[in-house]
Figure (cartoon, rainbow, N blue to C red):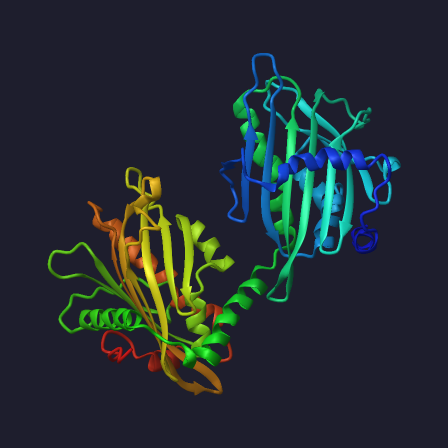
Length: 492
């Protein structure tokens, strides 16, 4: 069914039958000219989907009507995503429907046309309210690189095969699905779904607010259906690696950028001097050496260092660490207490990097970091990357939220090593100083420096980029060079 409809989307065009045009005209009113006026941001349970809502609590005895909007990027062609949206009762969606024990979902095939189908569903509501039944028609039209799907409630009786206690609800909705440029060889489109929901009767506000995100989750379902994270991430990392490999020699660095790298390099080279009380935390990867110590002079800052060997070329290692907004890193960020994360590019080798983390301890405010980052190819065998705290008026502390500004300085050095069995080798040295600031218990500070050493991710780089043809632990440790005495950082 989906293959047949994909072909139709490509050749049917904008033809609408006489009785279909009013449905589209009604649903297109939801677009409201495409502006954001009146929309209120809605907390989304997904990092992939931006949600917003228009809702005005009803007067006494009035009906509860809310309009929700969800926008996301799907790794599929316009035609594929539109076909999926139209196939309301596909085997996969019916399976999910049954797994969540939803009351009813069916398609009235006798009322279907080439670009139209009619479907019915029963939505579960809280026990003190009747479940809501929706009977609606879906109609699509297409043009090059764009498909629109309009959906509106219709009158009629539906035989669900079982007796259900239900109240008829009403809705109208529109999908706007637009082509985007290829990314990593994967077709992509932007899917916008707007739905106005009238559940029938006077519904408590909290029920309406809860139901809107559930209805909008269809965009997340489409994203999950067509997801190609690995291909898209690999393309983004590969693009930067290619730039470093082919065009780094053309990069021009300002005095401030060179000074940042040199200042950070000297700081950590001084921290590696003998006599400091380094403690080796337990590493999650046997091929990654970790060490941590405290700054001298009564500082609450902790300094950590980790070293590993990666079976990959130096440019790929540097690019994978420097690209912060790939999907895998965004997912890990959310999984480990990340609240916000953004990158502002200043030029091809200089960014502003902002990140917010929840410490996971009640009573402690989330910590916000704001860094300037610079990468530089020192010579054909060395790449340095530095991160340093900055203050920027475009990023006020907390930005009106209850965040506390923390501090960190990071230095990474990538060194090309001789190949082993024709497999490229890169030594990665990662140094970080973290100061959470405030009266933070030492066990929290310790856990955060270790998590930074784990997540910033020599082990991750090694596992993602490493070549499995050579994995003898003894050879790795011999080449890795071990702990503090592994040599100086050299010039930037």
